[in-house]
Image (cartoon, rainbow, N blue to C red):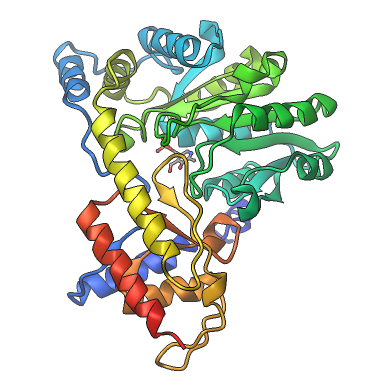
Length: 400
Ligand SMILES: Cc1ncc(COP(=O)(O)O)c(C=O)c1O
């Protein structure tokens, strides 16, 4: 009898693994490979958050907590939604989980039946389609073009919705493109959703505080309060508080959905780490001034990356408004020949070739459902980024 389940076969191995494995191989050979594939800030967790965790241990907060999170943290999350996003939630409308990932996993597992469809705009964060498939749903991909800054065109959204559409996932600021939705753009999406009452929305706001050019963040539930019952607003401390390893994410939405998500969590992980919850509490309740130098550094790197990429013949890159990623288009490079006579025909080949020749590891667009692109993470220091971009430029110039 086969050990691995049929369900798991629906998921393809991650295309990022190919690049990661090759980068590791080159590093083992002693090559100086620069990784631009990181999905986490390169800044340390702020001291006041670490101190809160140490205090939690010393105070004996080392036991199981409520499955859905400690009341103090839920209260802080309610206040966060009220103050930052002007949305009111009750305690039974909030859940804390093991990272944003478990929130998404819980919500999809709690709701999807075999014919249910989930609209996933491309380029997407890599886990949305696979989580949908694992939960037994059907991913429906909605292409978002570079000409539209990788954002949803409301007419295209209207067309792709069917009677089986259960969810639409919106991720702003976006991983991998760094695009952010304006108030007007969200209003246009809300207008489409008002026509299709069967559609619910997950808004993944995990990069909410990582914004540039004084961009003002809005989340759908804030600008369309009439749709609040159909929206699950997802957030977490991983990216904005430099806390990826602490594993705390949270969400707020209608009571029956949150109750169902708690049920799944109660039968899987139970509560997220008690210590991490106290650390997250200190983060959410504390000042976010620590973010200012981080944002300044990210902003400088963002401009460096985008300007340098755009100076390379064959590469076109949009200036992202948020997160710490850039998503350059490499269409202009396809069809060109390497010094070994290989014709580069897709973004996987481009990133593999860059890794071997420029010694730079980046993730191909195929991993995010929109080709031909690659994702650059600029959560790496300025000098290293300069070196990486210089290497890329030198290599691309040698193509014929
Ligand atoms: C768009 C998006 N959502 C959710 C997550 C998951 O975050 P966490 O580390 O809190 O599970 C990530 C992490 O890469 C992400 O990029």
